[in-house]
Length: 79
Image (cartoon, rainbow, N blue to C red; front, side, top):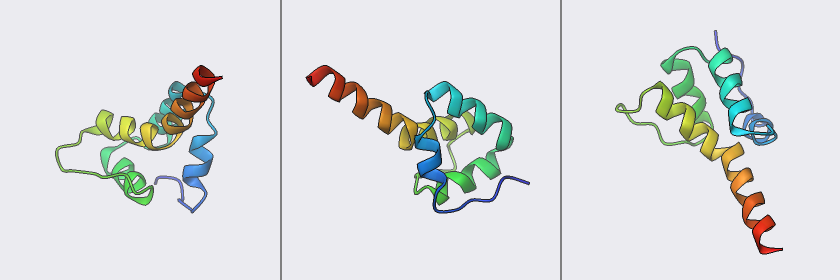
């Protein structure tokens, strides 16, 4: 069974230090496409039938830690 989801999941994922560390977490905790798709939907990440496992991992990363890392990179360049 996949870990329980709550309203803090996206916030917890956004605190990972890198895309790779979150990817490793997702691969270990959500081993199949069904559990990963459920997680994605709970995070309001669009899921299509054509999405494969790797696509879902990337969408979740982009919607959580990827967003924060891009924002930090933009702020870093503008200062």
